[in-house]
Image (tube, rainbow, N blue to C red; front, top):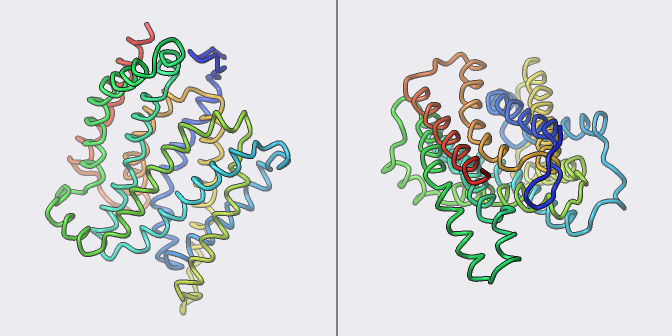
Length: 324
């Protein structure tokens, strides 16, 4: 089924469903990446994952001819995509302690909130107000749109912190000390989250229907191989276990498949639906990691999951009222 958005963009419910599949695929990513990192090391494991992912994309989702790709999308979208992936890989590798790794992942998980706020501020309703009235009126419309989704965004983000923060919750004083002593991974994670939210909201217009995921993915693989060799790390001294290679293939399928589904969803589906559903990514990722790694899901996790659901439902209700 297809519908027309407020800006005339044709929205496909099937494409939206494909985009939602990305969230399910990404939920399996964290646990598998941990297994890969333990088997091969952080940078080598990431390089192998993206290399295998590139091969899978070339087999199952070959890119359209490069001449069909809009140049602005190729440059702007490609830079954002590669920067995000490289920044996240580096930030996790530079985290000095397990606690820092959790904190860095929480900073990365700010991207759903940023995406919701950007989608609200630059959505079809604001664009129509800008064309119909003055720039001042458009600015007022943006502010009102952000204020409408802000309560739901705050509730959902609090849920993410609670769900991912662990049994004892996030120690803000300890986190501040980690940031002061080693700020680079946190800065990289924050810039990466901002880059990904900008990519998701703005590149669909530039793309004009062209999905560059299969073009950008090999560049990410090359960038991470460069990072690996520059770090001075080689092949593990002990031969990696057989299940490490299975985890590499599983992580590659999860990440590459997720990006392929997400790219199709943001180009042809409902950005509003995908933005609100994206809050489920860290919660489902934590749950899948717990199952894969044999961990138990505690009360803080379930309370956080409820808050994420409540924040998303609140934003959906506000959006449906505005459309009505």
